[in-house]
Image 1 (cartoon, helix red, strand yellow):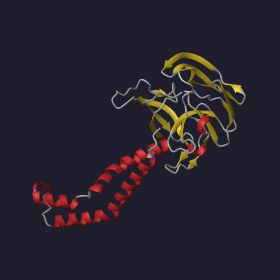
Image 2 (spheres, rainbow, N blue to C red; image 1 turned 135 degrees about the vertical axis):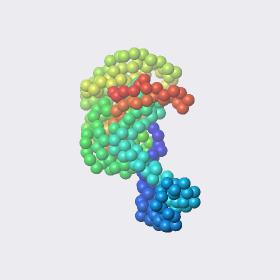
Image 3 (cartoon, rainbow, N blue to C red; image 1 turned 180 degrees about the vertical axis):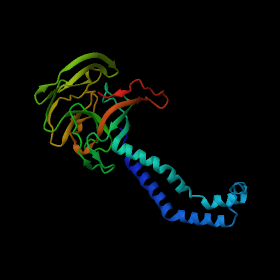
Length: 283
């Protein structure tokens, strides 16, 4: 997902425009009020209709009351930027899916909403948690920062702290219990043939896809892992085409961004027509 630090950019814009507005209130606006009073003292202000038609008065008043361009822009954009900043930082943040790692749950071009408060309230940019609310549950689709990376990733929570995870022939075993899979359909593309399944994670059902026949050699992803305290084991629903905890390790709690809760639009590319056919909650 997008590696641009948009929250930091947005915070800088909010703080910058707010400071400019405050500087105007504290220092610059007084000079404009004085200039306006000077203009009014030079004209007869008892007849407001006459003043509205007086070109000299209107011109002088325009010069006296004119705000610096930077101040004008700051006053216009600050309220909008502040609202967007609060919404994105503490409530919901939009993301676009860039890869096939979560197919069939999420497709490339899906625009999703991520709940930023369900796992606790964090300070924007600095990401320190200030209020605990809920803990991630097995089966949640979560946005986070992988260990050692700065870009957002989205995967499904497979392992909770203390769990033992075993993956054998694309079948999961969690704490010794096999996680059932039920066949849904077969699909094919240039990479091979796939089976779309419904997988049950301790009773939580979700769709997933696994490779049945590959058109090229692939690396085995079998293995076993024990999830550390304060960490989560993440996997993509497209099991044979996902860079996840099998590759880069477990996700520490402080790297959590939020829970993906809904698809609100699908847009393949700039030159395609946006679609709302996939709108709905994320399983």
